Structures are given as structure tokens and as C-alpha cells.
Length: 125
Image (cartoon, rainbow, N blue to C red):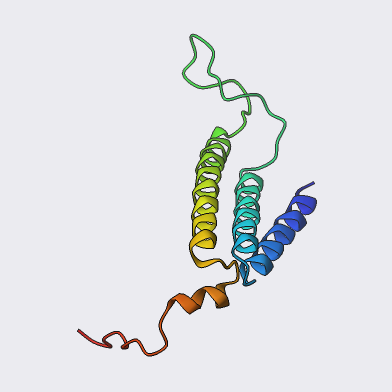
């Protein structure tokens, strides 16, 4: 099972990287989301895939009985999913606003907003 998830992580990261290298802003956003999901799956897989009981300590004991599941990777992934979704929503609105003002989705066409004969920025301070 871990080999399948490792292959799936590699596939997600490869697809995400491919989409991030495109010129379309929407494809870049989708690539960022797929890349992030691949990283989350990698964290989940690194936290060991076990069918153990939840990490609950019964009353009267200081430590749990037997082997328990590690709740930390699951908590990290849940938090990252919420943050990733809100970041995707923000970037989607930002891309839509850029499309409305520049009337372009291609990043090369968006460069037309930069003037050709503009002065270069200072190279040293």
C-alpha cells in the first residue's frame, strides 16, 4: 500500500510541476493545488499507515495501552487542507481580477502592462 501511495505522490508532484510551468494562470493555480495535495499525501504517508486505535488515554492511566495511531500528521494535514483551500480561493479571485483588468489569461500577454521603455530598477543600493 505504501508503494502505491509513493507512486501517487510522485504522480501528483509531477502533474503539479507540469501545470505550474504553463503560461495560463488558471492552469498554474490548479497545478499549485495538485502539488500541495501531493505534499499532503507525502506527509500522511510519512506518518505511517496503520490500523491502530485512536490516541485516547483511558481514565486512571498515564499512558495509553498498546500501540496507538499518531494523530500529529492527521492534524497537520487537516490544517493544511483548510489553509490550502482558502489560499486557492484567494488566488482564484486574484486571477479573475487580473483577467478583468488586463483582459488576458496568458502570462506573456500580461507583460504588456509593463512599458517597453521603462527605466531599469537600480542594481545596487
